[in-house]
Amino acid sequence: MYRCASCEREYDADGPWRCACGHALDYVDQPLPEGDRPDPASIDTRRGLWSFEAFLPVERRVSLGEGWTPLVEAPDWNAQFKLDSVFPTGSFKDRGATVTLSQADALGVERVVEDSSGNAGLAVATYATRAGIDAEIYVPADAKATKLRKIERTGADIVRVEGTRADVTAACHAALDDGGWYASHAWHPAFFAGTMTWAMEVAAQRDWSVPDAVVVPVGHGTLLLGAYRGFRALRSAGWIDEMPRLLGAQAAGYAPIVPERATETGEETNDVADGIQISDPARGDQIRAAITATDGDAIAVDAATTENEHARLAEAGFQVEPTCATATAALEAARENGTVGSDDDIVVVLSGQNR
Image (cartoon, rainbow, N blue to C red):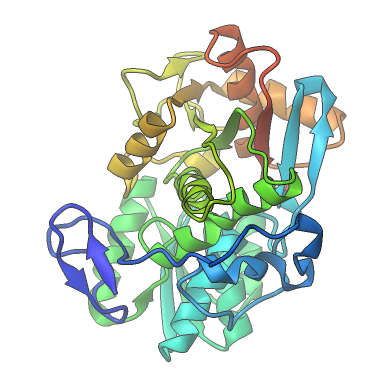
């Protein structure tokens, strides 16, 4: 069952993709395991992120072994990096795709529809073909050719849309009137159930200690909101005692989250970080609430800073796409403005392969 947090309407899992009031939907209940937290060494990591199935509202049906990505030291940044760039399709979006397509498979869905600038579309298309489900992916007409080729190779149908990223979403929503199940990384609650496993892996890899703060890029906030829900679920289960602060990195010119608190590293529009060019995230109110609840912040990063940080990451051996360089750039800015201390314990996600 789904519930709308805005108006309290409830829907069956095979019902509409959003509430009649226009708000996003979430599961009515958050499953929690019983008993004490396990010794991290006893967790069967061969099940990937599905080793946290007791927290998930969906049973495992469609999987490529995703999860338990490395957590490595990054001394040049005085932080730890969680390397979600090593996932089957190269980004953290596989976390949401495995859960979303598992639910689609359980419901007998025959065709899924998604809109994306690249990574989410590739993840949904890949897991759809794994499940034997047709996929239709709406993309910007100027999306990177390398990403589009990867999506095409899954057998998915690609619909190129001229205009802004918002135009792509609008075209996708209009097409839903003709049928199709919306496997949206921005709207579907199963996707956020999947991304919440990022927080669970981080905590387990640190022997159930949480960092002072985590830093993630934010477009639709799929990972930031998922991380918040993951740490919150662990605390509700009694597996951790504290919540880390959430720091969101946004692209300058596309920084709607907590605008009154956001820090700009420049004024021009950041066209380098193409993966987070979202001006009106579907769950903006929930993202802002998560940042506020953890005393977090949002930092907008300009194009030049993104490019410089991308090169710095590559020189340190981290081959990732430019979008995720906004996260390490935001960490540096947060230290400079005093949002976090120089000795604070920080985890940053690196996601998206350099193509």
